Image (cartoon, rainbow, N blue to C red; front, side, top):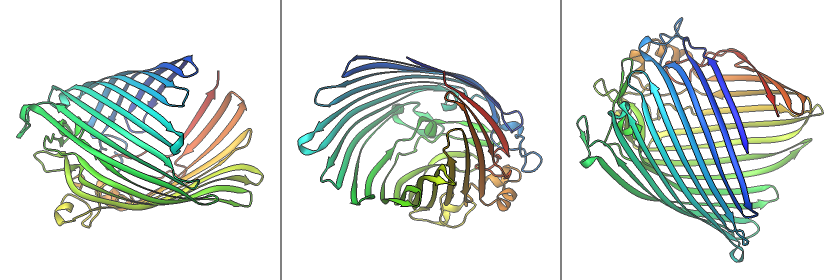
Length: 471
């Protein structure tokens, strides 16, 4: 039996923003025999918070909210997760997992909502020694019931039913292959009409299969090649199709005609182990290519409907990622170093000037994406006192909704003077005993002014002191 209690009382750097949050977790596990285990997990969450959607202005009012965009919340959430695991003498595994999740969000401005989720999953894993393979089968069912003024002050229900099969096969000492298939069905029962949009009887039903395949090949000692290709499918959420609200002068409208998005993604990569001096590690280089059909994004459609989830067309996202993970000794002290660089090129497949009408970029690029991301982290691993430093650079979001320039004061000037940002954090950890550790962290060391979303500033330089006890 395991129990955990957590409480947070935080006053935000933004004026009149706060978050008070408490959580209790519990887990009970009982082993009936060597091959049978049953258990249940539970979680209870309670909290209140307040925040704003965008600032008063980008100068003296940067950490103050526009008075019409404040949102307050008072929520209660709890979940119950039972499970049963059975492993027979052949090593086959049967696993049953369930969840009951209840949410009650009481917010201002008619944004309150209640929802209940029921989840069930059965998974069977079968080992086939003669074929040197593992077969996995499963069935998943997810049901939700939502009641909210955000969604037209009505009750909506949705069902997701899916079956899947996966085969992992070792073809030789060097080559492994895995392939899988999933068939998914979605149903939604809601209002038959919202505004001028109509759905017969308010019922929508859709099914689609998806496939995936991957392989891993050991080219040499410490050198591994990999490749994968897989399809993707995502049905619109209830919020995307039915939400109706506003933030200040910003309207958010439903879209009952919103279609599901689908596509595929491929990746090739190489992982190489190495040893340089007293350091050992792994270097990983991967290139990826993803294509989406009827991609869904939250876009500004005009003054009448405001923002709305829409299918923006077919898109293509390509890029590569390099990472370095090393461990060794620096000046005689055990040290871990993590570093990486990611580049993405997000575009429309068939770009026209219409795609850039409400974008701050007139060329072909998807909104709210940063093309370049660089990370570096160094951490000593001594027995008592340890030091760490992390640096992260994020390039400018080249395209955002142009309409923000009209109703959020100072957005355009701020973006023109802030193009990308680099954050540096330092930390010191002191292990007083085996069960007592003190950690202090100085975030945003150089007090960089930056924004991850138009209209709101992230925290300036701040110091955190943390104590960890083991009882």
